[in-house]
Length: 208
Image (cartoon, rainbow, N blue to C red):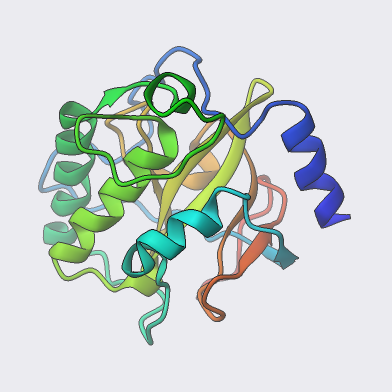
């Protein structure tokens, strides 16, 4: 069934990134020194197949695919909250959105962007920036979703106050369940290179 989901996503052209209008920055972390509200954790439903472009990306950038670590949920202090907001804003400003087809000639090509990139490239750059600031790789998970029938990738940050997503469509740092996406899968925290299926968005996870 999981393979079927990925095949159907590919057949429908969902490996690209959502070109919908930017998302309004409401119901999210606001000011730079604000403590994040208590959110929810994702409920996982077993193994999923990674997006095909994930494998060549990992062969080029293994450190950015890594999710190994003992810290599964970071303590989200006001300083950490400010870092999430700062990284989101800086990367969204530094990288110009451009489809893979336009920039590389491929339908789906995951890369660490310099000047241009699409949704997964923004997520990868944000992961790199947070790793530089000392965030554990095990808390920074590339995540696949859809919006309005289009594929999308965000960076999920696992914290003690919930799972928050960093998104190129908004400068807001949102609780995942408050974002307008249908979530499919994210990187596994326990098995390197593996992905796990995400349960329904309406069901909050138990506290980690």
